[in-house]
Length: 290
Image 1 (tube, rainbow, N blue to C red):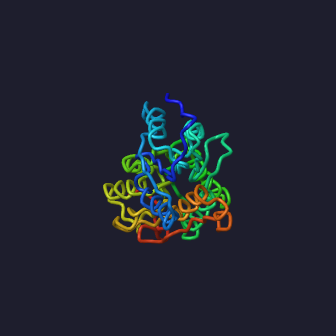
Image 2 (cartoon, rainbow, N blue to C red):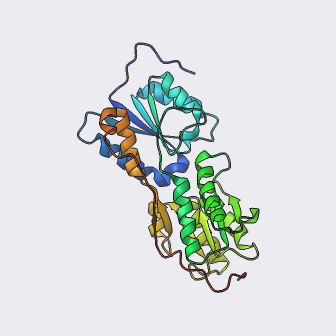
Image 3 (cartoon, rainbow, N blue to C red):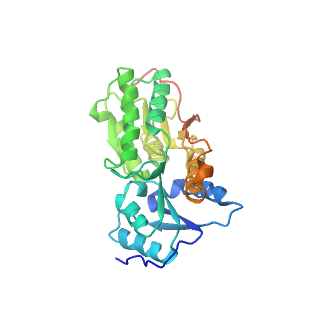
């Protein structure tokens, strides 16, 4: 590993380093960061890495060595990797994490209350008459995914509904995992009348699984996603999803890096909001298998 040279000084540049799996949320994050930099002398560098690759540490270190950013924004899943925040600080680069921070890290982070947002979304589905609600959770080792799953469990417990293990399946945030997990949930008997997926990519997979099984959405199955990426409005039916204010969060994160005193005067409560579209509706009269 290349060690930082003591004589090097950071440039008026901040970096947005993202994992390839974060491509769906990247436009909002990049837009927010650039909004914060507009009219300033600061620039933004964007760099992609593979969080599952064996060269992650080397690639990240090489980037820091070449670019020398003064600060760095790390969206999930990179925001959960403590090695990256530690390496950044070794190079005099202040990290700000979006969504969550690595276990044991006390650094800066900007987050919405995903647990509360998911609980409110499941409660909304329950208000529509759904009592068999499945969930496609994210990776088991992701703290952010765990928060979203806890929100689901909170709402199910608050309404004294079944949360049997057959109603929760873990995906990996990809379309194909949503499709496979959706097929598993649609084979449960009695079948769920609603499925909540922890991101829009997996929810899109559920829509595909339902179409393959000839299950009508939303007439026979409600499907809800999370993050409200551009994909949500492009699906058929359009996807009901929870909008996470990623652009606003990224703008705040960038301000923490370039003008921390000014950022302290801005609102820092980033609440997620349910965006209702055509993929979710009242519980059908029959909940049996198609």
